[in-house]
Amino acid sequence: MARGDEPGTWCGQCGLALADGDHAVCERRGELDPPRFCVHCARRMKVQVTPAAWTATCVAHGSVERATWG
Image (cartoon, rainbow, N blue to C red; front, top):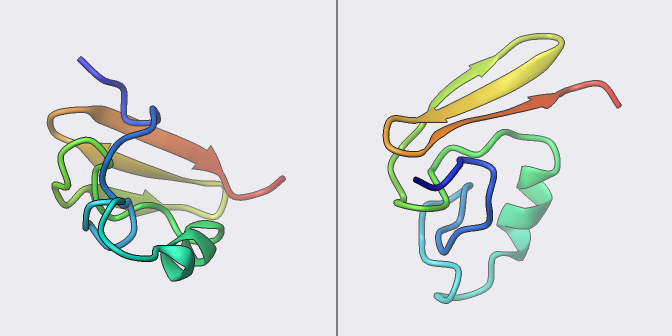
């Protein structure tokens, strides 16, 4: 089973295939915002944001967590 933080074929911000079009805006948004879609299956993820970190969870591929500081 793939882990949620491994590279995938779908955009984590808009949910579309990375091969379809330009995702420059999504890449810029991803610098500050957590992913909203799983990069492995394009499912909408459950996202929890706290002052210290964010966690995005796909029911099939697990969770990705990043600290918001540093």
